[in-house]
Image (cartoon, rainbow, N blue to C red):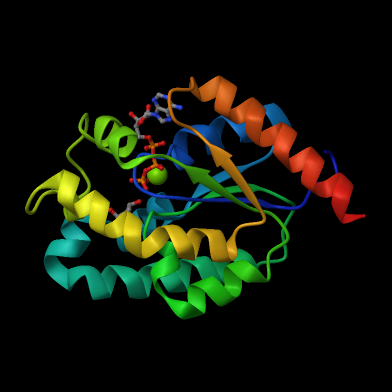
Length: 179
Ligand SMILES: Nc1ncnc2c1ncn2[C@@H]1O[C@H](COP(=O)(O)OP(=O)(O)OP(=O)(O)O)[C@@H](O)[C@H]1O
Ligand SMILES: O=C(O)C1=C[C@@H](O)[C@@H](O)[C@H](O)C1
Ligand SMILES: [Mg+2]
């Protein structure tokens, strides 16, 4: 695992990319980045503010720039959590497909709904019915997460530490079959 490349986590809102990514980075003693947080730091504003002032399109532009910068930098392997909509742009998918280790954290819509209901900082869930929105986004995005991922890990009804261990096991298995 010491030689494992950068681990990139993709999946829907509430899959646990941020939570699991942080745990993995601790276990591997690596730096952790979250594209949502990097976007906020660079903008000097939070995601709801960016959506309000620049629209989703403005946020997506920032997201692509951030992904590009993070993947092109000459760097040590890190753990990178992405935003739930990272796969919406073709150019982002092309960048992700070039990466050796992209993990799709799968969560059912019911589980996404439960996990996202606790916070209020996801602009796409603030309009309309969250269950309908998550269902629509899942239909659109699940095939795209699968398109870019080398490993898929189910997260429903599992404690974050269990999910992190499952990701580690799945990565080891994937790397062993690669060589
Ligand atoms: N396996 C899990 N079991 C229980 N709760 C979880 C699990 N994974 C994440 N959570 C909780 O669900 C919420 C959402 O998780 P998190 O922010 O990590 O999701 P995310 O995939 O990063 O979402 P986003 O795409 O919006 O950034 C948090 O409150 C977190 O503590
Ligand atoms: O699923 C999405 O499109 C989003 C997920 C979050 O991680 C943030 O990137 C933002 O709220 C948009
Ligand atoms: Mg997150």
